[in-house]
Image (cartoon, rainbow, N blue to C red; front, side, top):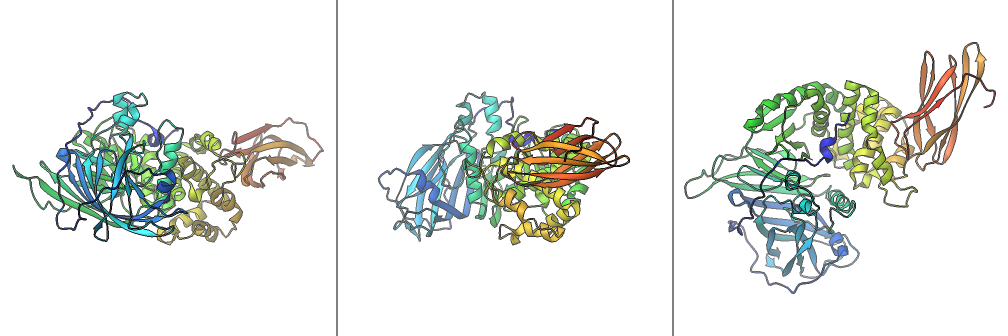
Length: 604
């Protein structure tokens, strides 16, 4: 069963005309000081080293939207640090290419800057507008500065980066649906549309996985950063009634102005400074019909209202499993936002799944809903826990509904990509430990395997206890979760976390070197199994001995680049030995089967 198709799929078919770019917006913020007119410096080239040195750890954004013109105007306070080894004589910051930097200031004084267009597929236009800002004095390594920025422009639908690769316009627009418009505003953030200031290394979709690595690097760098966001939205028809900021439901205030023939209406919402975790900042405003049931909220268009019940039914089915594993502490609802077009590609951010609602069997929706409910019930600033736990719960639902074999098949669908990403030798290549993982093949696929292995090591009760005791506010050290699992299980798991979480030692490479057995007593066999691990990661592996009428499974710890002989007393003649059942990811196949001839041997 493939239930994570929605996470990577690009919707095909469907059509939507590309919106025309609006004229330059003329919205002016009032009631706040602005820097004096900025003197423009001579253009200067920026390097990737300078871009990598900029570490933003706080955004405070005051955003005004004018959907009729597809425009945004923003006043921002951005606090950043020089994380590089050399002083920064120019500070690089970037926005979507359809936006413009208007003023930059420090302590109420204008700073000189230049801005140019930089090719990068981190934005749906395929380009970024980059400002080179001259600070009062070069920013020393480790020093920080808070800049004020005014910027604005239009954000229409743009699919240039996808059509440039030859994709049909319908498929391209279904993938890149971000825009500001009267009926729907959806801005997913870096990797889709850069509507807030960032500093990134240019990356192209056609250049291997460079873009996805850069998206992961940005999320990892920003996981401890905070963002405060105040949004003012102008409207001419009915006001929006749904606001989702940075993956969280936010209440809209009553309109402060209602529209007239001469002026638009005004409505606001806000989110206080909140730790982002491993999420790109996002902003959604829409008008939808809200249906709540337990821990799920479905926001639907009138046309899709008949499909809402399918999601509610699925949530009712999976809620007991999610509660059993993650507890019943108060937490936000899982929110499903109906996207405007039936072909729009789904997207996930925080507790929100944006997806076109369609008539679907609740049983098929259940793994997807389990994943979302888990995200709402369990949050961590660490990507491997935040994404891994949600994926883990999804596979547990598959196990409960269709059996362990189906769950392991789902889990192993991602093993080839993981094996390809892992270096053949630790330190050789671009392997990533889970604490600092930037690629989804690590913080989703490998993390899910790690949780399955922990379940086997400590048992359901201990892992459930650790997950329920987890508090993201107390996760201030790499070993926080390890200690929770050790306290719940009364086991020393240092070897496991060292091999699988804190370091990237690659994957095991297991094989059955030999199986030997001889009679110990009437109908009783002593079976010896030689297991070899040619990989660099130590693992505790399930080993099963089968006979005609019975089977026996135990976990056997196999050292990296080593071997072990496991002996078991079996109550009948063994017919088959299985090492690994797919729950341990390996360099090659994750299951090894040895069929035994019914001729005993005296060799051990």
